[in-house]
Image 1 (cartoon, one colour):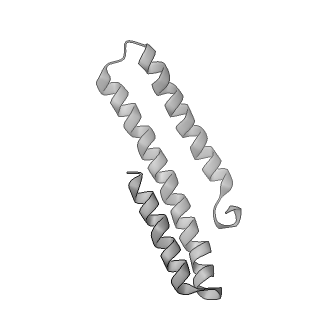
Image 2 (cartoon, rainbow, N blue to C red; image 1 turned 30 degrees about the horizontal axis):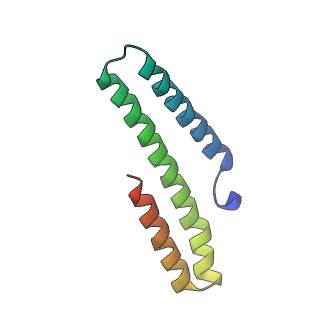
Image 3 (cartoon, rainbow, N blue to C red; image 1 turned 60 degrees about the horizontal axis):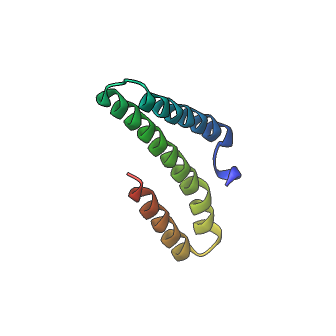
Length: 91
């Protein structure tokens, strides 16, 4: 996996998401309006979705491309379709 994506970028994004979730956790104990809480939850959800998109794109550009060029194309495509299916359940 390290060879198909920028691990430093992924770690930076994950730390931001963790920070957002920690902020939401603190907001639960404060007198924060529900609408504001939902806005922050949605922001974290969007950031997590973007992280998944980046991983999926890296997988496509490296792993899938390599599998098609040097391996079993049908198996690679089936595996990629399964990855997309898993990712689409996240939304």
